[in-house]
Every structure is written in C-alpha cells, then in structure tokens.
Length: 175
Image 1 (cartoon, rainbow, N blue to C red):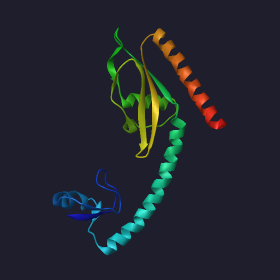
Image 2 (image 1 turned 90 degrees about the vertical axis):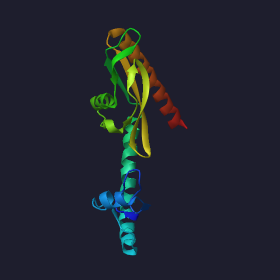
Image 3 (image 1 turned 90 degrees about the horizontal axis):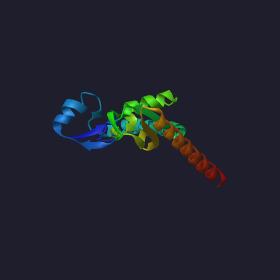
Image 4 (image 1 turned 180 degrees about the vertical axis):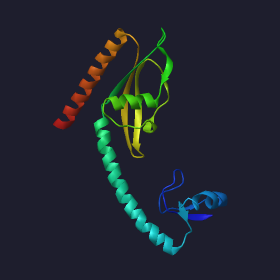
C-alpha cells in the first residue's frame, strides 16, 4: 500500500514522503491515527506546504539544540556508589543517574536522550547525549566508590580535565 506521510514516523519516513507499507499497517495504524493519507496530487501539494513549514521549524529547533550542546561541552558528572574491593559496583550507573547528576549542575537533559550501557565499575567514562538526530555531545562520567581517597583522586583528575578543555579553548580562540 502506497501512502503519503502527514507526519514524521520513526523508522518509516518524514512528513511528505511516499512510503510503501503493508496493507494492515496502513489501514489499522497509519490512516486511523492521521499519520498518513492516500497519494493524490491534491494531498501531495498540501503536504508539500506543511513539509516546508516543518523543515523551517526543525532548522530552528536544531539550532537551539546545537546551542544547548555547546553549553554541555566539557560537562562532567561525579556519581558516588557502593563498590567492592576490585571496583565493581553493587548496582549500576544508568542514564537516569547521569541525567539527575546533570540536573544538579543546572543542565536539563532527559534520561531518554543519554545513550549508554549501564556502568558497573568505578572509573572515568564518556557517554553521549543525543539531543537531536544530528546534535550529540560527549559527557564525562566519573564513577567513584564511597570513601574519601577515591573522591580526592577524581577531583584532581576533573581539575586536570578542565584545564585541558580551557587550554584547547584558548588555542582555538588564538587561531
């Protein structure tokens, strides 16, 4: 069944795309939910206008998210958890914990946007926040065991990381 998408559908297409789908998917899901319509010259013209408007708004949204990503560059989160002697955590660091840590620092990143596998060991990790399909930013996650010695070492490493970022920013501005 050939249909014209009225809205963007994940893993299928964007607004204005003509797609071939199975009859049941089209009849039972896309058409009743108003996500697609039949392919006619009138519908194609109408959707083309909506697509232009959609693309303008999407460009604005992408620019806003890129600006937000710039503020996240160099962000790092320290998460303290119980760990065994070898550094294995008794739980796991999840995207929700990272999101909560970023919220404490003043960044509003939803846990659904953080792409990572659960972290089960103490150490330094880099996770990706995918704010948009085309806008991603790396975030440092420091996982430390409860106790003062490990936390002091992490704070020293974070200070060194911040100094590296500042040096990189200065050399980029000097160019």
